[in-house]
Length: 83
Image (tube, rainbow, N blue to C red; front, top):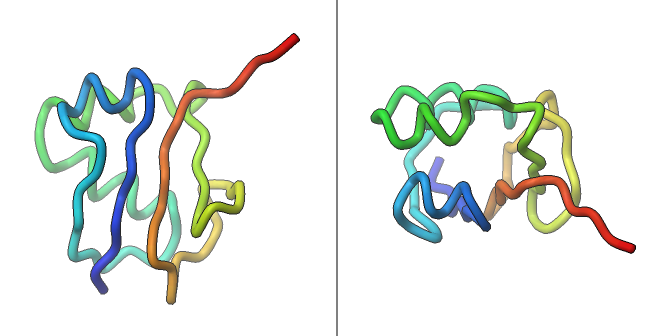
């Protein structure tokens, strides 16, 4: 399945691009992370600490076990803080 993957903040900086279109066999966000981390050192560094990464599937916050079947995009970003 083809999927748009979006990167924000320091993830974009580590990977070196704001988005990419991937062809994936992943069925969950966690599977997708594993595939992406295996691509190269930049992706591996970005996903090395998943405690510091949040994700959304089609603009809805999601956990690593969330299914991605039928999704158009998955976004990765650091946790947000506010005040």
